[in-house]
Length: 161
Length: 259
Image 1 (tube, chains in turn green, orange):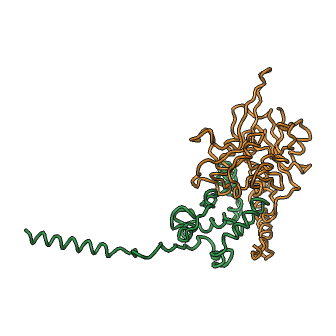
Image 2 (cartoon, chains in turn orange, green):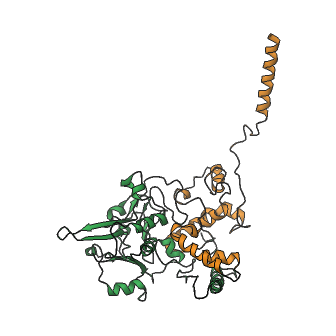
Image 3 (cartoon, rainbow over the protein chains, first blue to last red):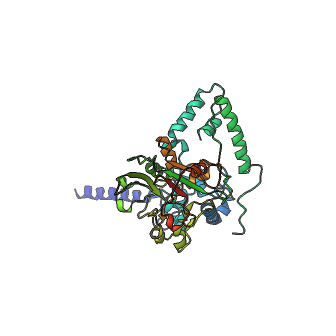
């Protein structure tokens, strides 16, 4: 009986050691490195990647003042365009989970982002989905569908817009 | 910021060029789709890389004689467009934002009832701008009075100064429920923006006016008060209109008929 118990203890210890050994996370590796996911849309950002990494906040700051105060709505340095390309495919957001594009680096660098206290972290929904536009958008679709001539998908999209 | 490249570029793929090509081909598509039916609306918006101009003054004419009792379509449309929670659905009704609200007034002597929507009046001389300690409250070149949330500290002086009680403070975190086009957030004051995102997009109308027209009341008319040929200017020439608290001499962007 005693021998059986001892054997049982040995088996349990081995199993526990094996389980602990299978843990991939290093115990003393510092904070987890940021996960940088490639943008869903587009091949190249508006500036070279290293410039964007270092200076994106300057571009955004400059643009936000032009946009809010003067009403210049150019797309190049617009936060909305960042979000449109960089929103995660899984969460649909740039800041919903810890691996999302903005949060991933910012939590690693311990720099708080205030942008998303006010700005939506998700890309803009289609204008046609807006309840106020729904009816007219539908009507335009109908008209486009009735057309006998060939209308390319691209043109259809533009009409629906 | 001197090292930054200028915002506009004149490369062959510049936005102006793209927009022109887009408009041209869209117009062509509109012609083939259905003869006699104009699918493509004429864009009224300025180019997106061009600043708002003081040649334009956006304004609104409210015809209180057409504003229907019990109808709140303008309020609903505003909250849908701009993403604020209506008072009725708010957990804290007293703190709920109100960009636009319906008022029902009664003359105590004659019992005559008047309906009208009340919102930011987009003054030419806005008291909210005068009192703002950080310069966050400002009037854009085209007459729209806005809050720059990047500099707003939530002190609420502007709310005190506004004769129309048009402004609200966002008291609680909005938890990413904002619209992509309408950033708004905790600790900042906000009010009617005359749907600045729609104006800049070139829609040429506000959500409230669209809803009012869709409901068949036609009590709200939005337009450029500086353009003598605009619909609003023509109506303002014909109809007797009033400014609310005209004694304050603020030169309002929202004019009322029938009050």
